[in-house]
Image 1: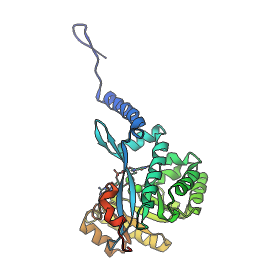
Image 2: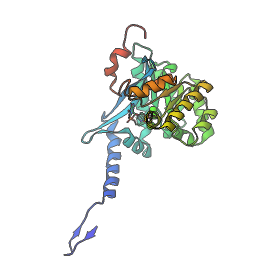
Image 3: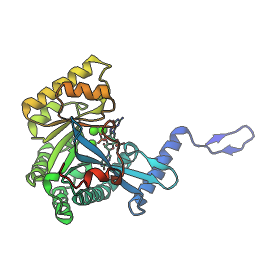
Image 4: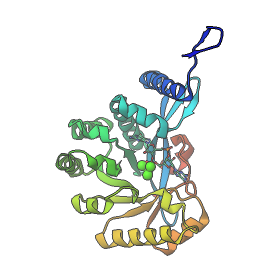
Length: 274
Ligand code: C2E
Ligand code: CA
Ligand code: CA
Ligand code: CA
């Protein structure tokens, strides 16, 4: 509230107030998004280095009725603050598994998990139930977690991950290399895949350090027998560097953008075997 010279009072919002108000408004809108059918799934292909697509990562999309598309980097944190993430994640898991179960080709589907989901012990039960309900073979489902998941009650979280893995579902470590202690986690849990963070990939051809790190991570994973995938591969220069370093798998715009699954209909419903 700002007093003006002639005794009038003008109410105005500072830039910060506006941002906070936006957050509240957006969070409230997010509460209706699921019911209103504003959430959808995009699928981004994952490929062997030779280009053969073996699966897709499911990525959540929110189209706000007036603001249009809102980035998951903006709305996932809001959903996590309000626990809305639980309902949204249950929906995305069902939707992703149901979609993958409908494909002619037995391709894999990768789903991102939020740290909040691990604070609720029903997670393994939810996953088992979703597999039963959708009929998807557990080996076709991969769950991606970031290091932030492991920052909670470590022993408890590892035991949940083991229960999930015991169902035959695979667990991938996402955004590898961006956290503080990625290496120690490789020892603490038998990950089925490592995803090299796109920040490293985007430095290919720019900084020698990033290329050295990529080389080292690929070598480390080979030594440990953990499959590795490079994410955020956009250019032919990046792809050929990764091929030269024997990186087995890639994901990124060079293979395909995240899109509604119908865009990839010919791949998932190909009648000849892959
Ligand atoms: P992420 O899991 O690391 O997903 C990869 C992000 O990189 C996606 O952004 C994808 O669209 C983008 N990307 C893929 N290929 C390229 C490329 O070649 N170049 C560039 N520059 N970017 C590429 P998106 O879809 O905006 O998602 C952002 C983040 O939001 C995700 O990062 C993930 O952390 C989170 N997220 C998305 N969907 C879900 C979900 O269903 N559940 C949860 N818990 N988190 C989600
Ligand atoms: Ca991911
Ligand atoms: Ca990632
Ligand atoms: Ca990320």
